[in-house]
Structures are given as structure tokens and as C-alpha cells.
Length: 218
Image 1 (cartoon, rainbow, N blue to C red):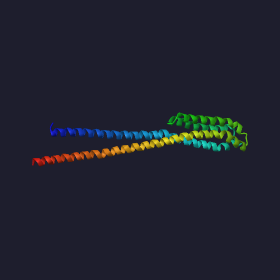
Image 2: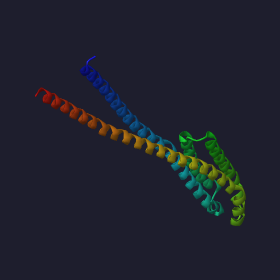
Image 3: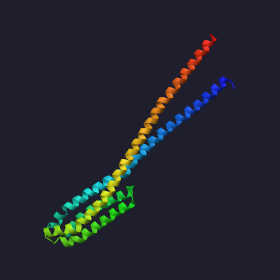
Image 4: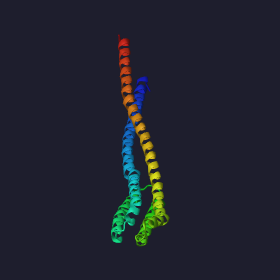
């Protein structure tokens, strides 16, 4: 095989490698961009939504806990009115639990614990209304402190566990997203620098060969 043929064959091999490498970098950049989109969607649809719903549920829980004494201590309140008021808050809590259960990425035992704690709170509070409404404010405060507030604490503990997992998941996904973005930027930068540099080098070599040939001919 002549020297010129070997050079031409080597050029084809190098060109094939360059094209394959360029296709690989382009594909990797596209895949990385797709991964970023998927990660962002996952953060919003799962841990972010769970964290927001859990915090909203905790806020309503604390609100219900704080004004419970004021509601039941008023002699003008009828049990049906109190029950209706509480039922509206129960419905909001159960709607939040449904969303949390559907979007939570952690152990199913966590959401089961939350649902059971909420059911326990609702049943205990409903059963206690006929007992505490006739009581004085001091008696009501003592009864609620001993029998109802622990149920609130159980719901809050279940929410704390879910919020902690969701927030940790958000941090992990954000870190993964940052790493993917860095890799995608590096691959795009490498592709942007490498291809022009190669073709400039190839053009320079070709011009040099032409000048050498012209010099020899001269």
C-alpha cells in the first residue's frame, strides 16, 4: 500500500472517529437536557407538592387546635354548629392526605400512619364534643389537654416525618439536577471547542501540504 493511500485511509478513520464522537456528545447533551426536564417535573409533582400540602395541613391543624378551646367553651355554641365547623376542616385535611398519599415517594407506612392519626383525632374529638360542651372553661381545658391534644401531636409527628423525607428528596433531586446540568454544559463546551479546533487544524495541515507540494514542484 502506498504512502498516500495509507494517509487517505488514516484520514477516513480519524474522520469517522470525529463524527462518532460528535454524535455521542450531541446525544448526551440532548439526553441530559431531557433528564433535567424530568427531574424538574419530579421535584414539582412529588416532593415539592407533598411538602407544601403537609405544611398547609400542619397549619390548619395548629389553627384548629388553637381555637378549639374558644369554640367549645362558649355556651352559645350548639353541638351541631361545632360539628359542622370541624367537619369542614376535616374535609380539607383528608383532601390533603389523599394528595400526599398519591405523590409521596417515601414508605407507604408514613402515609398510613398519617391517615390513622387523623382518623383517631377526628373520632376522639367527635366523641368528646357532647362531654366537653357542658363543662366549664377550666374543665374543658383540662379535658382537652389530657385527651384531645395528644391526638393532635400524633398527626403532627406523622406530618413531621413526611415533611422531612420530602425536603430531603428535594435536596437530593436538586443535587442530581445540578450535576446533570454541569455535565451537559461540559459536553456542549467540549463539542463547541473540539470540532472547530479539529477542522482548523485539518485546514492548516492541508494548506501546509499544498505549500510543500508547490515547493517541491517549483
